Length: 171
Length: 160
Image (cartoon, rainbow over all chains, first blue to last red; front, side, top):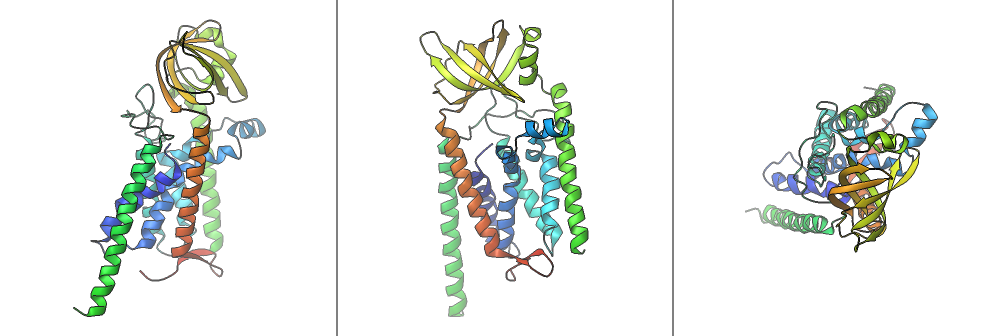
């Protein structure tokens, strides 16, 4: 999968320009989409607790892979949304948006046989085709994401500053 | 919805994710179109002649003979394979995907190879960058949201 920094920056790049047009899309919601983008990365829990340990301890087949699938994102986003005291459906929507953005991005990475992993599980039990656009260790992908994010960030700051001046001048 | 109900639903969701983990792994071998590494490790001879898809860590590369020694991980350990017709630009410690045909004596004749990590240091790079991403999103979430001690839930820090 793409690195976590790329994952969380993609919803920022996608949603921030929309915020310039939509008053109700404030920064705190974009931040939740960025948090949702990190959900598939929870699969890296295997660095702390290997799935083989769970299999041998509990005596059942087990894989962390569903965390990085459509089903995993929908369920984990639900669990996180329950940690919020208000507007849980809206929170859930932004978390799922971010998670889906990461899954789609990961679905474009290299597989030598041209088919991605089972990221549509459990709704579709087959491997969608992948254009094999990148490998996650290639720093060029992150460089492009960082450059676009910096541009969006600067435009956003410029717009906020301009809006404040405009409001103060009373024009 | 009170805190207890929310906590119970969260436990239910965690249980559902665990259930998916069990279901996924129990179905995986039937859905994955190639023999998996566990099966190759334990029943190697029965897969000779079959097409395989291997994820391997490169132990060494011999460019003159176009071969590479790969370490393949499975659930309970690792085994070694020799990849023939191996032409990828990768260093020791790198990770590759190999599509090929399984031959006797732990040899795979490569049809196609993709470099996932060109060197062992690539993994360190990915983990480092991911750590930066985790810190960034954590800081941003707590900049805009706070944990209310009375309701034990995240609340917005301000209207907007």
